[in-house]
Each structure stands twice: as C-alpha cells, then as structure tokens.
Image (tube, rainbow, N blue to C red; front, side, top):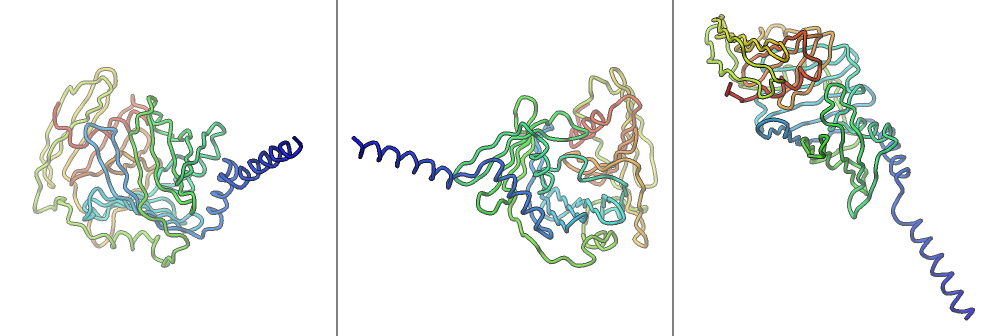
Length: 338
C-alpha cells in the first residue's frame, strides 16, 4: 500500500515537473519577445499583405528595414516589377511618403509608427500585445498565437487581430486582422526575417531612395497626355453623385465629382504628372500618412491626397471624419460603376 502511495506521489511530482519544463506561459513569451526586440540592432523582413476590404481582393509586397531606434524604410509594391512603388521612410528629419515614379514626396511631423497599429512592424505587434491586458494566448506545435485588440487611430472597423510567432525564433510569421464579426479582412504573411543586418548610411536617406526605385509607371508628361480612366468610390456613405465635371488640363484631364446626401464631399482625379528630375517635389503635411489598402495617402485636415495607377486623387470634405475619409478613399480603386 505504501509502495503504491509512493508511486502516485512520484507520478504527480513528475507531471508537475514536466509541465514546468514544457510550454511557456503567456508572460514568459511576452518577456522573450520584448527582450529580443530590445537586443536587436535592427532587422529586415519581406511580407505579403492581402486586403479583402473592397470589391476585389488586393495584395502587395512589403519590404521592411528597421534600424534601432527610429529609422524605418517600408517599401510597398502592388506587383512584382515595382510599378507604382511607394516608400514610407522615417529618419531624424521626419516621416516621408515617397512616390519615386512621380518624383514626389510628402513630409510629415508625425508620431508614425508609434501612434497606430502596423501589422508588418515587429515592435508594433509587441506593443499591441503589451497594451491589451485582455489579450488571449495559446501555443500549438509550431507557433505562439496572441489574440489582441488593434490600435488603428483612423479605422475602428478592424478592432481585432491574431499574431503568430515562431516558437523557436520568436519571429513574426503571420498576422490576421478582423472586423467586428471576426471576418479576416487583412492578412500579412512574413517570408523571412533577418536580425541585425548591415545598413549603409544612405539607406534611410530621402534622395537616395527617390533615385533607387526605377519604374515605368505610365504617368503623363507635358507633351504626352494620358487617357484618364475615371473610377468611383464603392463606399459612398449613403451619398449620391450629384455632379461630374470634366476639365482639360495640360497633363490630360481633370474630373471633379461632387457627392451629396447624408454626407457632402468632393473627389478630384487627374492624370498624374512627374515632377522635374532636377529636384523632387516635397510637400509638407501637417497631418499623417494613412494606408488605403492599395496605396498610401496623405491626410491633412479635411483633405486627403493619394496616387494610384497613373492618377492623382484628392478628397475634400467638411462633413467626413478621418475614418470616413479613409473609408471612401480606400474604395476608390477600379470601381467604375456609378
């Protein structure tokens, strides 16, 4: 009887020991993630982001370079050959959104990327986990998985996310962002993650990056105006197109669309023109860079400007909130039906 009792005690202690030596707790994993982020001098990673927020699924490739502490370069390409490439750049001078094909850049005095969730930035993912005291945690054979709230300042329609980290390396593997109904609308898949890479002094320089991306995006020149393919917002927020005016300009055509009803706003689209190569056109913006799913826009007060497919777009409204402006602009892609 004593032998049997001793065996049971030993078995119980063994189970406790095995459990202690087995899966890490949520607190252990978060601590290791923080330590790795603090220890790294920087990283390079490539990812593919898929957006399911519009009429059609959109995807683009993302290359992220980060040098500790405040140097970032995020290059976004809507296709493989870098046509329409845009770069978000952060250095000691500020935050920039570069469109090399147009030789145009926006400069922001912005807290990006710390002021909002960024599903392709390592530190942002860790910060979202730390800030959410109610985050959920689980581990499977390969991944540590966190379910957290997001912190999108201008987009409350994507409140939740799942973040997958490799159990051995603690590197990000995948991020899924969900709407209120837990439908996955944004997915980021990381292809690789290189810790402590070597960076050159010019890697985060505006002029160097403006010149580094060769592109043959069909933008207009003064002598060769391009045909403008007019597109419309799929999301109109209950408003209707009241008036559409077309004006001939040197670069081709300008279309002015006025919407009214529940909300009043104006959308202007025109053939994009390339700034002179001798000096890039830097536009100082008091607002912030915003992601529209298919491109990066510049939000400044009650106006939003962006470039896509050889066209420049402007959205202006006194009625729309920032979130509503982004919703409308995000839906202006290839939607041609009124």
